[in-house]
Image 1 (cartoon, rainbow, N blue to C red):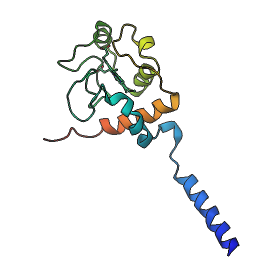
Image 2: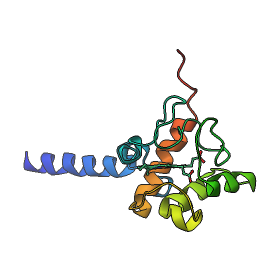
Image 3: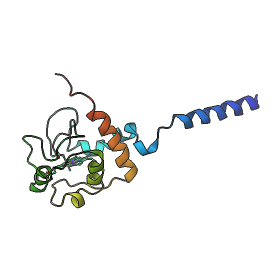
Image 4: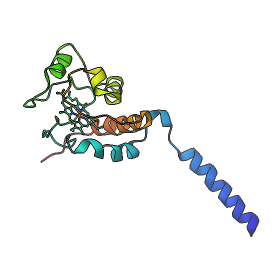
Length: 134
Ligand code: HEC
């Protein structure tokens, strides 16, 4: 009986190892929780601006391009000179908004590298979704 238990525990731990997704790609489920830190300023599901611009269809979007949002001159300029929110740029921005875009009006810092990977995985997933229909 005891042996059987040990064997089944062993099988269980082996299976769960196989199910763990590759960490380098980030974990979208964990990313959804991290996104709660952004939610007070950014809406993801519909094109509504809050203190920050909406982040619908963010990946592939030009920086500073949401109509009706009052960006800082620095962000507007970044978009004009060709900054696109791909994953690499997004990660650099979230690591330190001020370092990447000096003069940005986004006051935010404090994500670990692993959190940024998870968050990016979530945003990638969300960007692939079609906008909600009314
Ligand atoms: C305190 C409010 C606040 C929080 C929290 C915040 N942001 Fe922002 N965010 C802003 C503002 C304001 C801007 C516009 C910056 C500018 O114009 O320089 C911005 C801009 C951005 C942009 C550029 C968008 C564009 O259209 O070019 C991205 C991407 C972004 N934020 C992502 C995030 C993510 C992801 C988080 C969570 C980790 C986050 N922000 C948290 C206020 C916030």
